Image 1 (cartoon, each protein chain N blue to C red):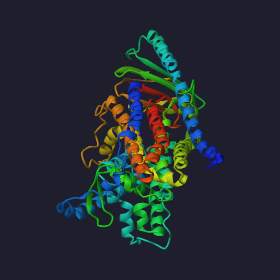
Image 2: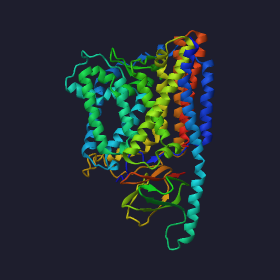
Image 3: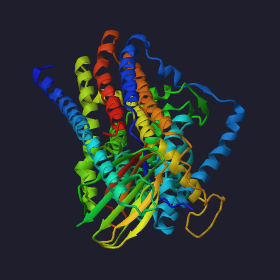
Image 4: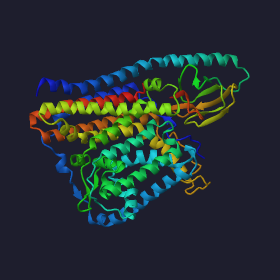
Length: 431
Length: 145
């Protein structure tokens, strides 16, 4: 039996100071070494088309596609039903673990490692298909601004709302509202918007640009490419930058809210009072992260005589690995430990005394990974995200600017990425 | 480009940097409280270990919490203990409540004015909240490891 009160009962220990110092020093060093050793001409774009997988694999693809759609729909339906009709105790309901651990943490990691699994399994699109919604409508594509708002609504629930993700009742309201909004959006803007512009589809789709595997949108072929090279093919739509900054800023707030500094601000507030202060904190951190990016890219724009907005958007691909790195650093242990609660509670999603998979009595094994390993993963994720961000920025810079400008133009970008990285590592110290 | 635009571009960067610097400084500043909090608890633990003779609980860290008027006296305590050490949480509340130690998932009902004690071995490393279940008030934070 699981007695957990809900998602995130345990948080990580502060990383050792020496590990923080090594991580920060390495990030600094690699940033400037990168300018010397990286390629003088863009390379990612040429690598990003990759090669087609063998025909045998292509023939399995339709079967795989249907299979993933079924998995996605079942996962969605069970999560919604469990949130609405299962136990109201967050520790006894599978929905918070399904949504806030497996989906919110597991899917982005899978997207970066394997490919766009959400696109393949997208339950909203399956519903839209069943409703026979059209691909396109007369309404103009709104870009990714709605997606940024949608993701903010989720991170608000998870990080600012006083019960967080652990409250099945609040989660069921959120899921219901989100689903209605999504289907309304699909009715208004069509299924193409649903597949590319809905919050999770858009965010996880961006993260999937890191993956070595992708589906060619024109031919439907599965193709293999150099990991990271997909970052060269990130489309700049209105609101894409906002979406990424919301994701990055929210994760930053999650770390920030565990510091003692924030603890003193939040004090002993409870309920909606706590929610209100946390909402300001969440907006504040998204604001800081966004201001730093806009400031740095403005400096680059000035050095190269370009439009600040163009530069802020042109380099946004660099933020994608950094965002994923932050997410892994903050949620890796959650996935490893609370993910076990998902496996247990999946046996009895509706609190009926079932034991579908024989796992209901499993308790969390906290010795699955050591605290030392967690600390290494955290620092490696942030530093790794930084290195990938630097590579993406460099590749874009040599594509956009003549050689001498290309090197100089990167200094503000390196500065802001170092700021994110050292800031992210500092948050791991706990404070 | 003119000087004016130079000043305009500098502002967001300065704001961002100073905001970050602010929270870094504040974060470091407040961590100075840490040894104080820890020594306070170890002092109380020594005191209680000496006085309680009939208790079957092994000598360990005592976290004493008094809740009145919806607030924990002395604010949210942060307590550090080593893995495998014994921890006793003693809590007195002025209203009926339920105490919950997260992660370890230990719970106990609280009767107004009556101290309740939970003793356990801190064998899961990590940081755990100690919370009043009904109001959601965080009363202490336990760091194991």
